[in-house]
Image 1 (tube, helix red, strand yellow):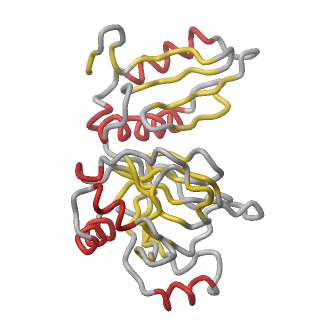
Image 2 (image 1 turned 30 degrees about the vertical axis):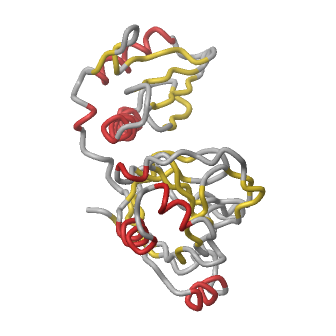
Image 3 (image 1 turned 90 degrees about the horizontal axis):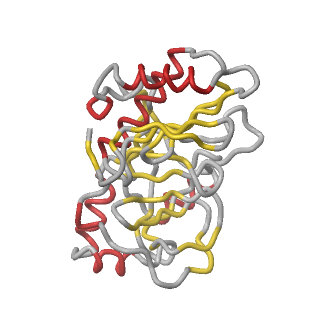
Length: 248
């Protein structure tokens, strides 16, 4: 466990009248994200009575329960007992995760802020592409927009700040970077993150049985492709050339 001035991690806190939040830190780290993912999987396996939904953020597991049929004190005790059962910061990752390969055009007019981001990271453009295209990143959480993953963590040199002003529009499939993370955009939107890569994958598919393509705990690689290959992948279907394999 780690300690701040007033909270000892991990901790359990109430959220509204029907939620409990199990948190493993007050800021993103690889161990805290690992712990949140592993703990949520354990809660799902435990089948505790009254739980209606679980989800994860960057460092926490949220548990929503039926307040009419469940005693919150008893559920908190059950979650505490599960929490005390092992060191969640060193827990193995959940089974069923996938490694995705998402073809990416780095830079060009499709992703015009690569040079700016590379300079902020203290790298040449070639070195930045080599690092970003070969670093295996984890889906730490889904948020901000439907099916949109926050991915990381990147090497320390990518601890670059967000822009001070917003880019008015970043397209669907854009890959942007800041604060040692990448975001793969599921919708077109304004952003303060720097647009460094462009993919053809559609992450949010509302008419599908699985509307969110990526799941927390999945891992992703962004191999470099040419502009011509990208144009062909745009026409190939919603996967945009992306493939995956189950992590074993």
